Length: 342
Image (cartoon, rainbow, N blue to C red):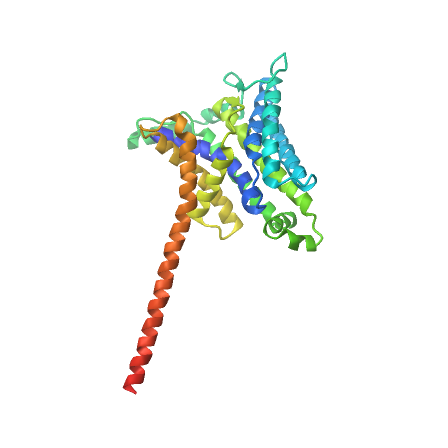
């Protein structure tokens, strides 16, 4: 059980980067971007293809980020310049990316034909390089020996991946916090809140929307590239339902940790992604579920995350109203008693 939860935390901290991208579009820009399902695979496909062709894993990951940025920017152009509905623009780009991703993965074949999967089992990735360096430090043995002494029979093979991704994810989180407080970031937030108002200040909302969608899908593609290297393969079907997972992470995090500030909200999104993966892992331990029920579980979790906070808030509001009513009744009763005595 401990190893399963540990694996979920590892995956959750990687998917948190994708959740931050979803947060930028759905919460900051108020844009229902379905490009995510395609750009996630674009990141994995680009990184896996370049790694297979012999490129450095870090360079491959950077190129994956640029590929995601381009995909998101095209969605923004379709919406702002071609005047296509936001939801439809995302759907069109998601559909187009399916074929594009097959073509990208097909570059690893001599024929150049589309390819649905790319194995990375024998290739060097960011995580294999990190594992080699981490193993030389001897930290794994110290941590695992301590856990065994406490009573844990099974321990992770390496802690290096988790520590690496915590550092990378929080660097991205702090960079997002910084960007949203800059002039461009504030204009981006204003575009999502009130586009007419920000246009009255001579801001180009079209450019801001394209920039926001590009940055969002760049983060999504980065997450896809890292997941492909983590799982040691890239799959063209990996992005199905990814937007729902991202939304679940955002909603769960906001419901638990709140949204009083940008710094707190982005932290909530990161924690929400980890919590979501842990909940999925625990649910899959129940014997009545199998791997085919994963999407159903995701939908149920999102429904609960949407309904429960509203129900709790409604209950609190009813209690506040009842308390105010009781206070008014007490005041009125006190006044009547005072008048009768007089």
